Structures are given as structure tokens and as C-alpha cells.
Amino acid sequence: ARSLAALLGKLGVEPEGVVGHSAGAAIAMQMVLTRVIEPACLVSLNGALLPFKGVASQLFPSVARLLVLNPLVPRFFAWRAGSADAVTQLLEGTGSRLDARGQELYQRLFSNRVHVASTLGMMANWDLETLGRGFGRLDLPVLLVVGAGDRAVPPADAREVARRVEGRAGLREAL
Image 1 (tube, rainbow, N blue to C red):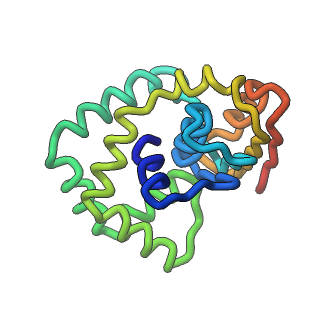
Image 2 (cartoon, rainbow, N blue to C red):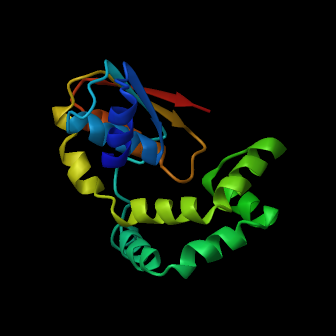
């Protein structure tokens, strides 16, 4: 959120509305809560806004923190993404269905070790507990759009976020 805020400041951009997908929704929400941006509305597309449930809530951030410390990990992940099968399996694991061009673009992204390192760094530093405590302070309309087939972010999470945003959230479910 701080890096994106710095970029927007450098560009002199003040968004009128914000749309974030998955972790991008959490970043956008953090920027709104810290008043770095003051858009008229926020749209979350399958937003990763709540911590994982159960053991994963403790295990996932810890593993990400360990992985980000080893400079060989991003190289390994990027090398592994050179396999179209690996990218297909990853995307299918999330419930995504993409055409060949979409898969090619994801493969290019996943093969970039700088992108992989940045993503691991972001996941290692997520603090979704603190973000969640701020939901009630949101003072703008929030639209939560949920794909029913998303396996990475359960649709029930959006229902929980809508409840905690205290009447300012709309929820739309898509098949």
C-alpha cells in the first residue's frame, strides 16, 4: 500500500474510484483506511481480505516469511513456472479458467523472479487481522463481487466482510 501510494503521488494521480482483485483489494482497502487515497467507492473482486482459517492462518504467513528470506526461492518458483503444466495446475487450483492467451500471460508473470519475490514479500508481510479491525471505519460505498467458483478466496469471506463493513457494502455473486 505504501509503495502504490508513493507511485500515485509521484504520478500526481488521485483515483475517483478503486477496483482491486484478490490481494489488490486488501491493498486498496488499506490505502482507504489510512486516508492515502479518498475515492468515492471501492470495488473488491474476490478480495483476499480475511486471514486464512484454521492452521493455515498461522502456517501460511510463517512459511512465506521463511521463503522470502532465501534468495533462491523466487528463482526456483520462476524456473518452475517455465512449465506450462505447472501454471495450468496452479490456475486450476484457484478455480480459474483461462484461454491459451491468458495462460501465456500468467506464465510470463510467474516466470519473472522479481514478480515472484515481490509477491512472496507481500504475503510475508500481510496483516489481515489489523485490516479486518478497520472494516467498520470505512466511510465509502464498498461493492464486494464474488465468483462462486473461486477456490482461493471462499465466497463466504465476502459475506463476512459485508457484515463487518456495517451497512456500506453491497455483495454481488457471480457464477
